[in-house]
Amino acid sequence: MTEPALVVGSASPHLGRALAQAFGIEPVATKMERFPDGELHIEVPPDAIRGRRVVVLQTSTPPVGEHLLELLLLADACWRAGAASLEAVIPYVGYARQDRRARAGEPLGGRLVADLLSHGRFERVFTVDLHNPALEGCFGAPLEHLSALPLLAEALRPFVSDTSVVVAPDLGAVKRAEALAKLLGRPWAVVHKARLSGNDVETLGLLGQVRGMRPILVDDMISTGGTLAAAAKELRGEGCVDDFILATTHALLVGPALERLHGVPVKRLVSTDSVEPRQGLPFPHQVVTLAPLLLRALRPDAR
Image (cartoon, rainbow, N blue to C red; front, side, top):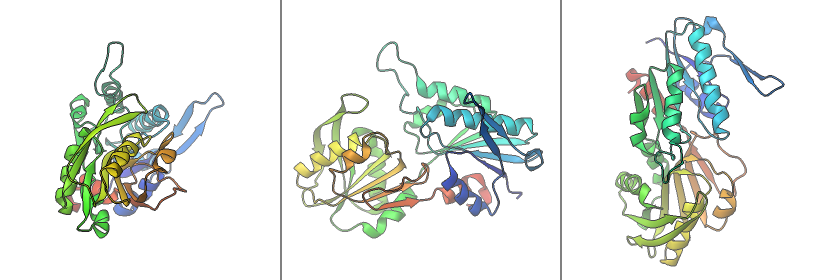
């Protein structure tokens, strides 16, 4: 099978290098610059694109709007350069949490972004651990929703003991915690939380046995760290061991995240490179590349 042309956006250099290496190819040499007014100008070499299947890789981390626009500009440049087909790999989809309206006057940000991506003329879109899988129905192109849980489980396995317990920090992470617990052969528990605002949460109780256990807190993303910090406080109050492992697909770690997690006895963070790995964290950070998962999805003969 002829390998695709791989176009990597500026938000995904780490994963772009890993995916190119997995394919055994070099990414297309794109040119990006900004005009004095801030507009992004992009060029792709037509000879590297014309008549080929093109995969555009770009995650939508902050600044989300800029990175989404860059993805669409890259796709449009490839289409106009004569690409035979276009596929998008968006490991982390921004605005996916805005999948419903809590009150009148709010937009459906997730639906709007899905509609926006339809202008990329993508034949398929690949995402990893979408915050709400139901958002798949909003995409115009077929969406392949991939799970990083098996990769995370393999990375966690050396640190799992007979006192480990997998914990969902809120009800939204229950299915994820249950699936990871099954992969690791460990029990699981769930913290019940209430969200007070976009930044603040409070816990309302705990379901499961954690006393004397070592928690593995798992969620699809760590944004500001509020959910995990509140869950850790609840777990410590219930008598768990001060030996926390955090497992997540998307380690955004924005805003006050590090300050909040500073109060949690974090022994290790395990995440993927869906988000560019952050440097200088105050605890060990193990980054698992998504490249093998994406390779199997993009090249069926590699399965």
